[in-house]
Image (tube, rainbow, N blue to C red):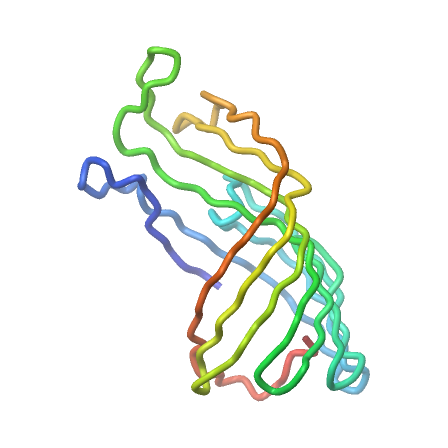
Length: 189
């Protein structure tokens, strides 16, 4: 998987190469259709995690029956209960965060800096998913951060300022559109 994203404070209203982040993942899956399970191994580099280096990923996924499935691993673990064909609930613990470019000078301790704002969290909570109109999904998440770190870094990845954030409540609501699948194999999750 490879993708790019633009993430910036856009204060200068001018884009630069530092506003563009490239994400990628190389993951190998070993699916056992008879047992309804799958092992996954690989590496992920994603600005969404607020890290500037790739992280390993390993997980074991198992479909218990039509209603229950689980996934144990890094960077996320989940237990899913499918209520009906349109609704599901999940308990999760996952790595989360963001990365954004600061494309104008930001004043910290009376000095001006350019760099990136990075936030990394480990979040645990509950999620509700509702599917509608064939490929759309609404989701709502609520939970608590078990680890929370945000800092401004220079372009050399050296810390400029640490926000010293405490753990707290986490809420997220969103909508997504799923593109049609070309793969015939169904994931156990």
